[in-house]
Length: 273
Image 1: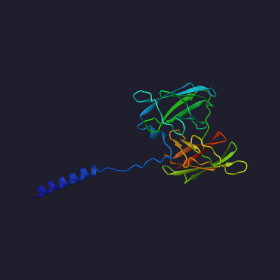
Image 2: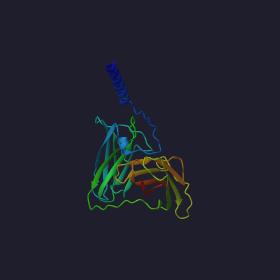
Image 3: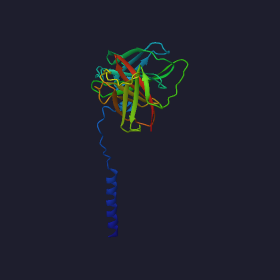
Image 4: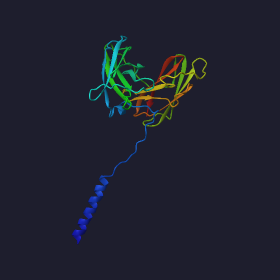
């Protein structure tokens, strides 16, 4: 009898262990916040396309070409793209030390190919970030690094002590709430005034279909966020952007706005805890 009791106990224990081993962690995923921006690495994951890059930029302040060919993994060119904030492809150009930033829009030649003539100001390493949406695909970013020959001088990147800048006669005050922390919903509020009379500017013009755009990069350039405003139809003096910082460290933020037909870019450096 004791032997049968022991066998029955063993069977019950085995069933319990199997049941525990098959328990699923069924965590439901929430829809992405359209204003929170998108990350380079997240969008590379499962991407149905890749980019073949080439550039003839090899000297500082010397014009050269950047060529981008978007292809499926089979090698076939991606023929059509969705318009995303008035453009088929957004290209971010940054220096390794983040002292140089440009946001440009290469011309579409067809058959998945984009080109642009441009230049960079100094020698050193640069990173290109292409942001696009294939007609039948999801928003995608792809990156590429290249080096411009010459005497390299790097600038140290340090968090700003005061988040107020004056650019092209405009005073921009950046308010971040709450204090930026990893994976926390964070509001970036740009207050834009006339630098002379301190009056709020209320006649901002749409830039790429919105009151402004914000690009954010981590110090190592590995974390990329392209953030769109909460109220795209705002004309100032306030522009709000909702985002999350994916890891701790130092980040550089570039806010881009337009007034009187001219785009102005304001940079800030912050530390995320």
